[in-house]
Length: 429
Ligand code: PMP
Image (tube, helix red, strand yellow):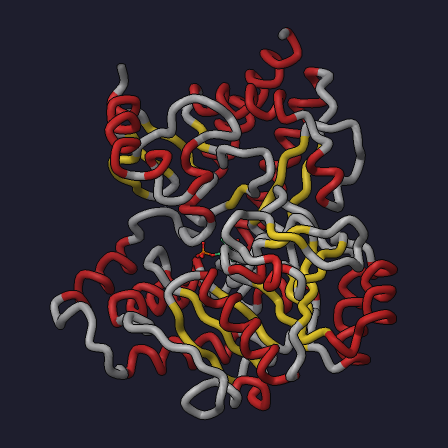
């Protein structure tokens, strides 16, 4: 038995499913999750002493790779002065100033502790601001696990949403309308029928939760258009994409104007941080300035702020992103070439520092239905072959991959080589 297997058994006794977040359990790919001992640069090291090139990067935050000395020093330095005060600090202002300087239309921002809190609170503000209850989201987008957002489409696109988890009351889910990503006509149709009831549209500007799906120009345009016409708030969920497409996020990369933005992951540099913010006339509704209540004992935690500040400092340097973009492209093109060589139907999506791998005959994968139609069995075999060869990919076909500045040409080449072997193996089976 490996150490990971032993730990997984032990974990299952007191932790549901042995993990503190479901996808970590490897249910989608089978096998035992790798238990991590430590991480450094582009590498994860498991408790059995095996090293992996990591493309999960803690599900996105570690854009400079793991254990960056400047971030570590900032955290260690700050930890000498106490861990939490429940009172304001200058660090919070500094991080808010940085975020507001980086993102267009980010005039005020409130720190929270996770992406879930950020989107949940942004929804409340949008509802409080508009006085409306209905919200629009898109199938395959994930915005954390709050009640209003754990909802799938009803039988028709414009029907009441239904809970996607037991425990979410139908009376809450019915306010959530779930539409198809990259379907501008469906979005316009929805607003033509129900626009006046809709408080907000919440969307991942690049979707990283049904693998990686890029927004079409028509879809991007329709998002802003329907919100302008109806008075609904456009919430861009940039928990994953924020500071991953350049400092102005996917909204800067694609030129989408957000009313509110949800952030997380990178802005904490690996510490538990989220944030929501946007246009001042909307954010002025947040307590204690306005009537929309939102709070957090540990929000703006000084260690987390120090970690986030050090991270944003480094990634704001000129030329930080270009090599990551180039590596993301090289990786996807390299894996594609290996799949082609092996005769495996396969395609990729990539933009900025995110990518998705699809075992499919389709040339373009643009929505949830197409992602779900991919060959998950082939993905499982690919995943395990890569894991065996020391490459750590997200353990589910519907998750995106991430690039960091710690990944070099050599890591990309090694990964493509491993992918080549995996593809040949798949073709033989
Ligand atoms: N929004 C998006 C786009 C996400 O990818 C995630 C998590 N992966 C969340 C929200 C929720 O963030 P958290 O897990 O920090 O609650």
